[in-house]
Length: 304
Image (cartoon, rainbow, N blue to C red; front, side, top):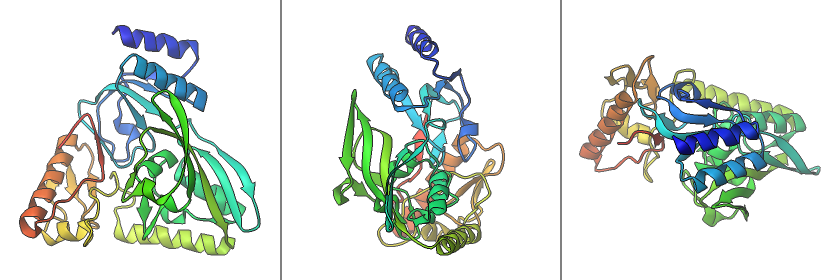
C-alpha cells in the first residue's frame, strides 16, 4: 500500500522501531487477537506527536495500545496501525514537599511502576490499583478504579494531543465519569499528586489489596479485567452469578467461577468465544432483571 510505504520510510528515517503484521494477542492480558498492519513503538513525545500528525494526514486508522488490559482484539486482527506505548515511559519529580509529591508521568508508564516509585519516596495515592497491568494513559482514559477509589483522585493535569495540537487541561470534576475521562484526544502525560504516608502503612495497604484480588478475582489467569461496568444499583458480577452463569463455557473461554464479571481464556480461546459469552450474560441478565450490562472492555477489530 502506498500510504504504508510512506509510513515505513518515515519510521526508518527517524529511527522509530516498528514491526509489520504483528500479532496482537501477546500484547493483551487475555492473549487473544490477530495481526495489525504495523505496530510502532515511539519513545518520546516528539516522535509520538509527529507520528500522529502523519497518520491523520494520510488518513490511516490507528489505535493506542497501553498495557493491553480491558481490550478484546478480533481473531482477524486490526486493519490499521497500532501505536504501542511500552517504551513511552518515564517519571519526573516536579515538586516534593514534606506533605505532598507531584510528578509528571508519560502515558505509557505502568501504574505498578508509579506505585513502586511513590512507595520508595514515602508517598501514597494509587495503591488500590496495585497488581493491575495498566499504563497511566489507559488508567486515565478509563478512569480506572477499585475498592471505591479512582485514578481521578490523584490526577491534577493531563497533556493531550488533539488534531495536530498539544493541549494541557487541569483536572476538575466535570472531566470525569464512571470509567470515563471525558476529554477527547491521545493522552501524552499527566501530573499526579501524592500524599505523605509511612512506608509501613503503604506496604500494608498494598498487601491487603493484592490479597483481596487473589481471593475474589482470577488474578493469575488470562483475562482482560472486568467485563461490564457496574450498574448504579448493584455489582455486575452479582447479576451474572444470580443467572447461574459462573463457569459457563463457550469454546475455550469461560465465565470465571471466582468472579462472574471476569471471562477467562483457558488457552486457545477465540475472540468470538468471548463475544458469545458477553452476549449470553447481557441477554440472561436483561431477561431476568431488566437491566442492561454495559461493557467496560473495549473492542478492536470485532464488535458485539
